Length: 122
Length: 107
Image (cartoon, rainbow over all chains, first blue to last red; front, side, top):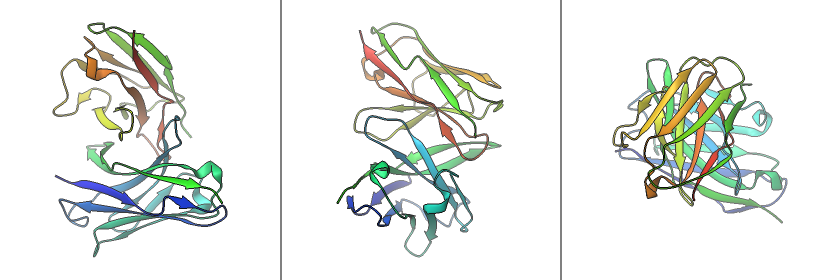
């Protein structure tokens, strides 16, 4: 079964760029036509969808973050990546990657990675 | 953007109780509504998708209903492992959005 694992620096300085990777195991990222999403959760708070990238590279971003977000797929490494520029303390959160499954016109997130905590601080 | 509002925000209940959590969308989302369960320190996991389809492997005590703007998650008989936070999420259109969560606690 497919498993996702996020990785990246746990500490990022304000105004710098947050870069995370989601490594997919148990299946080839290019074998199915999936969207891969990034979702974040500040400590003790709710979930915010950041955006998604399609296996072939198409993207959709949350307008609230669109100017700062870039997502991409590296099929040779079976990885999905997230870059968020000009970070502030408000970007401190647990960051999850998740695959989007589809049934007809319905879609949902499954599975999720375990998450990686990113703290923005000098 | 579509706003999702859950109620209540928190709920105390006992093992064996029947519990209902509601989720309202700011516009019609047909049946494009999913429910997730999140335990402390863990990633969310899907419980119900397409408003009423229980994820394979999840107990039949969980059920979902609704369409349009109003949805419910029902747990027919609470078990100790059900105490967690529950989120609804609309997948009708991007940007996808989640409810603020309902924390289910032991009474």
